[in-house]
Image 1 (spheres, rainbow, N blue to C red):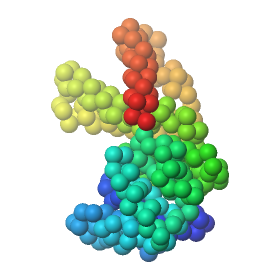
Image 2: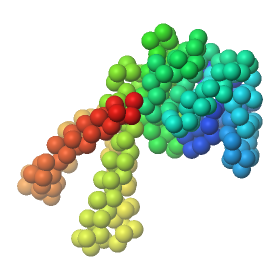
Image 3: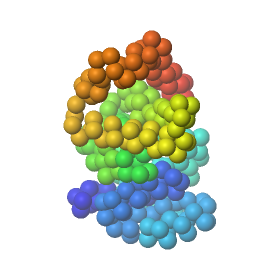
Image 4: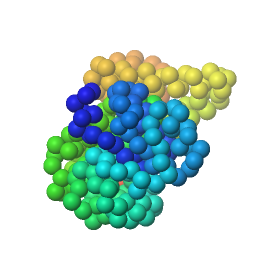
Length: 272
Protein backbone atom coordinates (compact mmCIF):
# COMPACT_ATOMS: atom_id res chain seq x y z
CA UNK A 1 0.00 0.00 0.00
CA UNK A 2 3.02 2.31 0.30
CA UNK A 3 2.98 2.82 -3.46
CA UNK A 4 -0.48 4.34 -3.66
CA UNK A 5 0.04 6.32 -0.44
CA UNK A 6 3.17 7.86 -1.93
CA UNK A 7 1.39 8.69 -5.20
CA UNK A 8 -1.56 10.33 -3.46
CA UNK A 9 0.71 12.21 -1.06
CA UNK A 10 -0.84 14.55 1.48
CA UNK A 11 -4.61 14.35 1.24
CA UNK A 12 -7.08 17.17 1.91
CA UNK A 13 -10.57 15.78 2.53
CA UNK A 14 -13.01 18.62 1.95
CA UNK A 15 -16.10 17.51 3.85
CA UNK A 16 -16.26 15.14 6.80
CA UNK A 17 -19.74 13.71 6.33
CA UNK A 18 -20.64 10.04 5.95
CA UNK A 19 -19.03 9.50 2.55
CA UNK A 20 -15.97 11.52 3.48
CA UNK A 21 -15.62 9.45 6.63
CA UNK A 22 -16.05 6.24 4.63
CA UNK A 23 -13.10 7.21 2.44
CA UNK A 24 -11.00 8.17 5.47
CA UNK A 25 -11.84 4.85 7.15
CA UNK A 26 -10.93 2.93 4.00
CA UNK A 27 -7.57 4.65 3.71
CA UNK A 28 -6.59 4.41 7.38
CA UNK A 29 -8.25 1.24 8.64
CA UNK A 30 -8.31 -0.70 5.39
CA UNK A 31 -5.06 0.41 3.77
CA UNK A 32 -3.05 1.51 6.81
CA UNK A 33 -2.38 5.02 5.54
CA UNK A 34 -0.51 7.26 7.98
CA UNK A 35 -3.15 9.44 9.72
CA UNK A 36 -0.69 12.35 9.50
CA UNK A 37 -1.08 12.25 5.71
CA UNK A 38 -4.80 13.15 5.85
CA UNK A 39 -6.39 16.43 6.91
CA UNK A 40 -10.15 16.89 6.81
CA UNK A 41 -12.01 20.20 6.54
CA UNK A 42 -15.35 20.05 8.36
CA UNK A 43 -17.27 23.09 9.66
CA UNK A 44 -19.11 21.19 12.42
CA UNK A 45 -16.99 21.24 15.60
CA UNK A 46 -18.43 18.08 17.13
CA UNK A 47 -17.89 16.25 13.87
CA UNK A 48 -14.26 17.42 13.76
CA UNK A 49 -13.69 16.13 17.29
CA UNK A 50 -15.24 12.78 16.37
CA UNK A 51 -13.07 12.35 13.27
CA UNK A 52 -9.89 13.28 15.15
CA UNK A 53 -10.67 10.93 18.04
CA UNK A 54 -11.73 8.04 15.79
CA UNK A 55 -9.06 8.14 13.09
CA UNK A 56 -6.18 10.12 14.58
CA UNK A 57 -6.25 12.64 11.75
CA UNK A 58 -6.17 16.42 11.93
CA UNK A 59 -9.45 18.24 11.35
CA UNK A 60 -9.83 21.94 10.52
CA UNK A 61 -12.87 24.15 10.07
CA UNK A 62 -12.09 25.38 6.55
CA UNK A 63 -10.36 23.81 3.56
CA UNK A 64 -8.35 26.98 3.05
CA UNK A 65 -6.44 26.09 6.22
CA UNK A 66 -4.96 23.00 4.54
CA UNK A 67 -1.68 24.06 2.99
CA UNK A 68 -0.03 22.41 0.00
CA UNK A 69 -2.00 19.14 -0.27
CA UNK A 70 -1.06 16.79 -3.09
CA UNK A 71 -4.57 15.37 -3.47
CA UNK A 72 -7.88 17.08 -2.67
CA UNK A 73 -11.08 15.08 -2.34
CA UNK A 74 -14.30 17.07 -2.62
CA UNK A 75 -16.86 15.24 -0.49
CA UNK A 76 -19.42 18.03 -0.35
CA UNK A 77 -22.99 18.32 -1.60
CA UNK A 78 -23.27 19.38 -5.26
CA UNK A 79 -25.12 22.58 -4.40
CA UNK A 80 -22.26 23.61 -2.10
CA UNK A 81 -19.42 22.85 -4.48
CA UNK A 82 -19.14 26.21 -6.27
CA UNK A 83 -19.05 28.12 -2.99
CA UNK A 84 -16.45 25.74 -1.56
CA UNK A 85 -14.37 25.93 -4.74
CA UNK A 86 -14.45 29.73 -4.70
CA UNK A 87 -13.03 29.73 -1.20
CA UNK A 88 -10.28 27.26 -2.06
CA UNK A 89 -9.01 28.64 -5.35
CA UNK A 90 -8.16 32.08 -3.92
CA UNK A 91 -5.76 30.48 -1.45
CA UNK A 92 -2.23 30.37 -2.91
CA UNK A 93 -1.25 27.52 -0.58
CA UNK A 94 -4.08 25.29 -1.86
CA UNK A 95 -2.32 23.79 -4.84
CA UNK A 96 -3.02 20.04 -5.17
CA UNK A 97 -1.91 18.12 -8.21
CA UNK A 98 -5.32 16.46 -8.48
CA UNK A 99 -8.93 17.15 -7.55
CA UNK A 100 -11.16 14.14 -6.91
CA UNK A 101 -14.87 15.00 -6.74
CA UNK A 102 -17.68 12.74 -5.52
CA UNK A 103 -20.30 15.49 -6.01
CA UNK A 104 -23.08 13.93 -8.06
CA UNK A 105 -23.92 15.62 -11.35
CA UNK A 106 -20.98 18.06 -11.36
CA UNK A 107 -19.15 17.48 -14.64
CA UNK A 108 -15.41 17.43 -15.18
CA UNK A 109 -15.83 20.47 -17.44
CA UNK A 110 -17.32 22.43 -14.54
CA UNK A 111 -14.64 21.17 -12.19
CA UNK A 112 -11.92 22.11 -14.68
CA UNK A 113 -13.30 25.65 -14.84
CA UNK A 114 -13.33 25.86 -11.04
CA UNK A 115 -9.86 24.35 -10.61
CA UNK A 116 -7.62 25.30 -13.50
CA UNK A 117 -4.28 23.58 -14.12
CA UNK A 118 -5.14 20.59 -11.94
CA UNK A 119 -5.89 16.99 -12.84
CA UNK A 120 -9.64 16.43 -12.49
CA UNK A 121 -11.16 13.07 -11.59
CA UNK A 122 -14.86 12.50 -11.00
CA UNK A 123 -16.11 9.56 -8.95
CA UNK A 124 -19.58 8.16 -8.41
CA UNK A 125 -19.33 5.90 -5.35
CA UNK A 126 -22.26 4.27 -3.59
CA UNK A 127 -23.43 3.84 -0.01
CA UNK A 128 -21.84 0.38 0.57
CA UNK A 129 -18.53 2.25 0.43
CA UNK A 130 -19.31 2.97 4.09
CA UNK A 131 -18.85 -0.71 4.96
CA UNK A 132 -15.90 -1.34 2.64
CA UNK A 133 -18.04 -2.90 -0.08
CA UNK A 134 -18.59 -0.01 -2.45
CA UNK A 135 -18.80 0.02 -6.23
CA UNK A 136 -17.34 3.23 -7.63
CA UNK A 137 -17.41 4.56 -11.20
CA UNK A 138 -14.46 6.81 -12.11
CA UNK A 139 -13.97 9.24 -15.02
CA UNK A 140 -11.22 11.74 -15.88
CA UNK A 141 -11.41 15.15 -17.54
CA UNK A 142 -10.32 15.46 -21.16
CA UNK A 143 -6.89 16.91 -20.32
CA UNK A 144 -6.25 14.55 -17.40
CA UNK A 145 -4.07 11.48 -18.08
CA UNK A 146 -5.68 8.05 -17.86
CA UNK A 147 -3.01 7.14 -15.31
CA UNK A 148 -4.74 9.51 -12.88
CA UNK A 149 -7.98 7.59 -13.37
CA UNK A 150 -6.15 4.32 -12.77
CA UNK A 151 -4.70 5.74 -9.54
CA UNK A 152 -8.11 6.82 -8.28
CA UNK A 153 -9.58 3.43 -9.21
CA UNK A 154 -6.84 1.83 -7.14
CA UNK A 155 -7.68 4.14 -4.27
CA UNK A 156 -11.42 3.42 -4.31
CA UNK A 157 -10.73 -0.30 -4.70
CA UNK A 158 -9.45 -0.10 -1.12
CA UNK A 159 -13.11 0.43 -0.17
CA UNK A 160 -14.67 -2.15 -2.49
CA UNK A 161 -14.37 -2.16 -6.28
CA UNK A 162 -13.94 0.56 -8.90
CA UNK A 163 -14.17 0.81 -12.67
CA UNK A 164 -12.80 3.47 -15.03
CA UNK A 165 -15.39 4.75 -17.53
CA UNK A 166 -15.76 7.50 -20.07
CA UNK A 167 -17.61 10.40 -18.49
CA UNK A 168 -20.42 9.97 -21.03
CA UNK A 169 -21.16 6.66 -19.31
CA UNK A 170 -21.40 8.03 -15.76
CA UNK A 171 -25.12 8.75 -15.86
CA UNK A 172 -25.78 5.16 -16.91
CA UNK A 173 -23.43 3.91 -14.19
CA UNK A 174 -25.16 6.11 -11.62
CA UNK A 175 -28.47 4.44 -12.43
CA UNK A 176 -26.88 1.08 -11.58
CA UNK A 177 -24.31 1.54 -8.83
CA UNK A 178 -25.40 4.89 -7.40
CA UNK A 179 -29.13 4.20 -7.18
CA UNK A 180 -28.82 0.40 -7.13
CA UNK A 181 -28.57 -0.01 -3.34
CA UNK A 182 -32.07 1.47 -3.07
CA UNK A 183 -33.37 -1.06 -5.62
CA UNK A 184 -31.95 -3.97 -3.64
CA UNK A 185 -33.23 -2.50 -0.38
CA UNK A 186 -36.67 -2.25 -2.01
CA UNK A 187 -36.52 -5.92 -2.98
CA UNK A 188 -35.51 -6.91 0.56
CA UNK A 189 -38.32 -4.83 2.03
CA UNK A 190 -40.93 -6.33 -0.26
CA UNK A 191 -39.67 -9.88 0.24
CA UNK A 192 -39.81 -9.41 4.00
CA UNK A 193 -43.30 -7.90 3.76
CA UNK A 194 -44.45 -10.85 1.67
CA UNK A 195 -42.85 -13.25 4.14
CA UNK A 196 -44.80 -11.70 6.99
CA UNK A 197 -48.00 -11.99 4.96
CA UNK A 198 -47.49 -15.74 4.53
CA UNK A 199 -46.79 -16.46 8.19
CA UNK A 200 -43.24 -15.44 9.19
CA UNK A 201 -42.42 -13.01 11.99
CA UNK A 202 -40.92 -9.64 10.95
CA UNK A 203 -37.55 -10.68 12.39
CA UNK A 204 -37.57 -14.01 10.59
CA UNK A 205 -38.69 -12.53 7.27
CA UNK A 206 -36.10 -9.74 7.35
CA UNK A 207 -33.26 -12.09 8.30
CA UNK A 208 -34.18 -14.53 5.52
CA UNK A 209 -34.44 -11.76 2.91
CA UNK A 210 -31.25 -9.90 3.88
CA UNK A 211 -28.98 -12.93 4.11
CA UNK A 212 -30.36 -14.41 0.91
CA UNK A 213 -29.47 -11.21 -0.93
CA UNK A 214 -26.01 -11.10 0.70
CA UNK A 215 -25.33 -14.75 -0.05
CA UNK A 216 -26.52 -14.57 -3.62
CA UNK A 217 -24.36 -11.53 -4.34
CA UNK A 218 -21.36 -13.26 -2.78
CA UNK A 219 -22.01 -16.43 -4.77
CA UNK A 220 -22.14 -14.55 -8.06
CA UNK A 221 -18.99 -12.62 -7.15
CA UNK A 222 -16.91 -15.64 -6.13
CA UNK A 223 -18.04 -18.09 -8.80
CA UNK A 224 -18.20 -15.56 -11.69
CA UNK A 225 -21.23 -17.47 -12.94
CA UNK A 226 -23.93 -15.59 -14.81
CA UNK A 227 -27.17 -14.67 -13.05
CA UNK A 228 -29.00 -16.83 -15.58
CA UNK A 229 -26.88 -19.86 -14.67
CA UNK A 230 -27.71 -19.40 -10.99
CA UNK A 231 -31.39 -19.08 -11.84
CA UNK A 232 -31.19 -22.30 -13.83
CA UNK A 233 -29.56 -24.34 -11.06
CA UNK A 234 -32.01 -23.05 -8.44
CA UNK A 235 -35.07 -23.70 -10.59
CA UNK A 236 -36.49 -27.22 -10.63
CA UNK A 237 -39.05 -28.12 -13.32
CA UNK A 238 -42.54 -27.28 -12.10
CA UNK A 239 -41.11 -26.34 -8.69
CA UNK A 240 -41.58 -23.36 -6.39
CA UNK A 241 -38.92 -21.19 -8.01
CA UNK A 242 -40.34 -21.73 -11.48
CA UNK A 243 -43.77 -20.70 -10.23
CA UNK A 244 -42.34 -17.52 -8.72
CA UNK A 245 -40.25 -16.62 -11.79
CA UNK A 246 -43.22 -17.16 -14.09
CA UNK A 247 -45.23 -14.82 -11.88
CA UNK A 248 -42.48 -12.19 -12.11
CA UNK A 249 -42.43 -12.53 -15.91
CA UNK A 250 -46.21 -12.29 -16.19
CA UNK A 251 -46.17 -9.06 -14.19
CA UNK A 252 -43.46 -7.57 -16.43
CA UNK A 253 -40.60 -7.53 -13.93
CA UNK A 254 -37.93 -7.05 -16.62
CA UNK A 255 -39.76 -4.11 -18.14
CA UNK A 256 -40.21 -2.55 -14.71
CA UNK A 257 -36.46 -2.70 -14.05
CA UNK A 258 -35.66 -1.26 -17.49
CA UNK A 259 -38.10 1.61 -17.01
CA UNK A 260 -36.65 2.35 -13.56
CA UNK A 261 -33.08 2.49 -14.85
CA UNK A 262 -34.12 4.69 -17.79
CA UNK A 263 -35.89 7.05 -15.37
CA UNK A 264 -32.77 7.28 -13.22
CA UNK A 265 -30.56 8.00 -16.26
CA UNK A 266 -32.97 10.69 -17.47
CA UNK A 267 -32.99 12.35 -14.06
CA UNK A 268 -29.18 12.24 -13.89
CA UNK A 269 -29.02 13.99 -17.27
CA UNK A 270 -31.42 16.68 -16.01
CA UNK A 271 -29.38 17.25 -12.85
CA UNK A 272 -26.14 17.48 -14.83
